[in-house]
Image 1 (cartoon, rainbow, N blue to C red):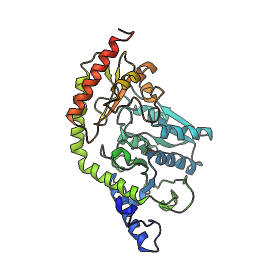
Image 2 (cartoon, rainbow, N blue to C red; image 1 turned 90 degrees about the vertical axis):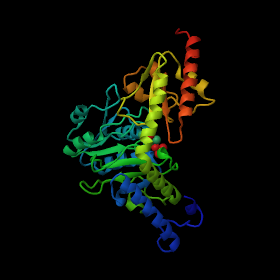
Image 3 (tube, helix red, strand yellow; image 1 turned 120 degrees about the vertical axis):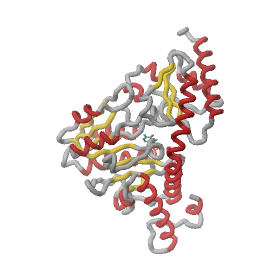
Image 4 (tube, protein in one colour; image 1 turned 60 degrees about the vertical axis):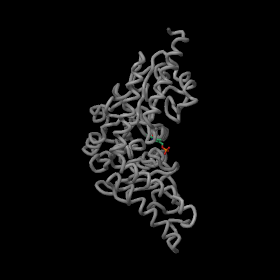
Length: 363
Ligand SMILES: *Cc1c(COP(=O)(O)O)cnc(C)c1O
């Protein structure tokens, strides 16, 4: 990224001089890398500020462009707020949205989806991997159902990119939201994949101004972030298989040790989940009190970074009570974690739970 803050400072849309050409070439290279990572074409990638903007562009952009076809959208109760809130916003404009429930393991039941599709349905939005419980949705099956009903399929793949293989052709995905910072890339950059062939997706831009990104998203591209995004994607793809094995081993080691505690349950499907995710509920312990004890050495959170103080809507959708949802912890393991760290976390956590339980009114 460094050269694009200094010597190669050109605007990638300024094609009248070599500073611009240099930046434009870097952006083009990045666009090709990111497109190839999901088996798309470079002209199907629209750079955005992240997955939040990509989700907004996909959902509002499709809703506006297909107004004449219908005003019904389908999504799922466990989606990220960056999907749920654009949908809620569309409801205030007169659109209808169906929020599908999930099964106890966090996965969508496919007949529920088929049944929910109506003649006026224009978009189905289902995330690839959940940010709290790591659960993977059956994208290929969902894509097949959408295709056979001629309804567009959007997926928020913020958590999935670089963690599981993604192929927009094999999955019949029409729009896909991506972000760099979930795979060790810079913050403030992401992309929306927008299918241009079979079918050609219409999209109403949500940012108006310059003609950048083929009129789909106005604004000067942030070249260093774009370059950083593509390098992060490249590195993640190269390491995808080995890292998945490594993370899964660490995650399973952690889970094995935590199961020596009584009253601990795993949230979300045991196998259809991200390798680095562990989400558990610990009975009779206040999650907030636990976090406080762990804070000096363990970087852990209960729900998502975006809604700290309410019980997780994801865990509620799984059938948990608010009480249970608050007694839950989400562990996110990453590239740099070690066995020593995992063992430390398990030890500190087990001690903290035992001591909290001893002093609690429950025991
Ligand atoms: C992090 C995340 C987002 C938001 O992405 P930003 O790039 O931070 O805007 C959206 N959806 C999911 C599933 C996420 O995990």
